[in-house]
Every structure is written in C-alpha cells, then in structure tokens.
Length: 125
Image 1: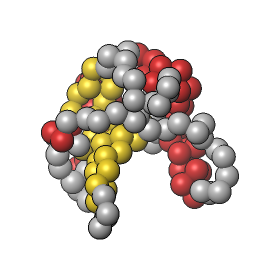
Image 2: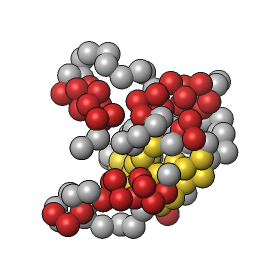
Image 3: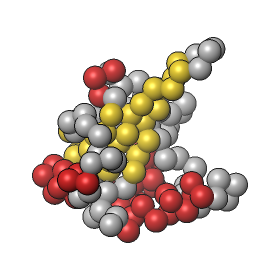
Image 4: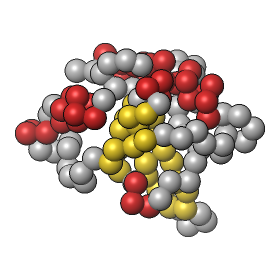
C-alpha cells in the first residue's frame, strides 16, 4: 500500500546490495518513552515514520531509530534529507524535529489495523 517502501523491502531482501542510501537511521538518543512508532511531522523534508527501539545483547544495550518513508511526500527522498541535515560530524548533531508518538498496540496481528499507517499519516501530516 505504500509505494515508497518498495526500495526498503528490496534492501531487506538483498542485504549485500546497495539499494538505499547509506543513511536510513537517525543516530540520536531519544527518551525511552518515544520507543515505538512515531511520525516526524516537522521539518517537512524529514516527514516519515520513525521506528525507535532498543536491542539488548549480553554485552550492551543500544537504541536504534529507523526512518521509513510515508505514503506521500517527501517519500524516499527522506534518506537524502537525513544525510543532509543530520549527518554532520559524528551524526549525533540534531536538528529540531517534531514527533507524534503513535499509540502502542499490535498493528501487525489485528486486521482492523491494516490501514492504520495511512490513517495516522493523514492525521499527522
């Protein structure tokens, strides 16, 4: 349903190929309360879904913030904008963004949430 995710799917299926630009994450420490699914609403050039989660191994715990394009503009160009705005120096410089945190629920297992991404995208964009 989201044409802009085709390259993301292709990258996942072909991890040894360079399909997406090298930067598809935001290297910034977000508050624990922001873990889950978010939508960057401003600036418009960075408007996307931002999935924030922590991975813990025996040796460390690390937070990740993965950007996924929404169903409309800026679409796949968010990766160019992330690199332009957020990858100066060591990648931890941060531009002011506004986020909307989506309610925590099981969006994948419940059929009534099949179009939740479009609903929330329209609500917050």
